[in-house]
Image (cartoon, rainbow, N blue to C red; front, side, top):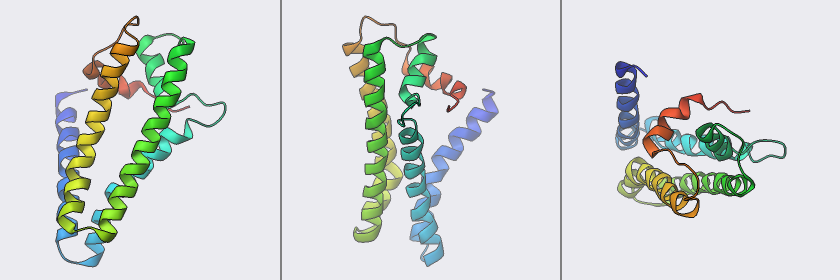
Length: 160
C-alpha cells in the first residue's frame, strides 16, 4: 500500500471517533443522532459481515483468513477453531453495538463517548491480539504469521 494511502487510512480511522464525539456533543439532535448511528452501524455491519459467513455452505470469515495465511486448506482442528472464532467475533460486534446503543439511550454522554470512541476500538485490538496469543499457544505446531503480516494480507480477503 503506498505511503500516502496508509497515512490517509490511518487519519480517517483516528478522525472517525473524534467526529462522532463532536457530533454528539455539538448540541443539535440531527448531529447527535448521526454521531450515535455511525459507530453503531459500523459494529452492526461487522457483526453481519462475520455472521453471514457462518451460513451453511459458506466458509467462515476467520477460516478464510487462516487459509489465506497458510496458503492451503485447513486441517480439521483449525477449521473447527476458526468457525468458533468467527462466531466469537460475530457475538463480540453484536455486544459492542448493544452496549453502545444502551449507553446512548440511558447512560451519561461522557460514558457513551468514552466507550464508543475509545474503549470499543481498544477492545477490538485486545481481542485480536489475545486471540493471536491463544492461537500461538494452542496451535504451536503450526506456522503463524505476525499480527502485522496478517493485517497486511487482509486486502486479499474477498467474501465468498
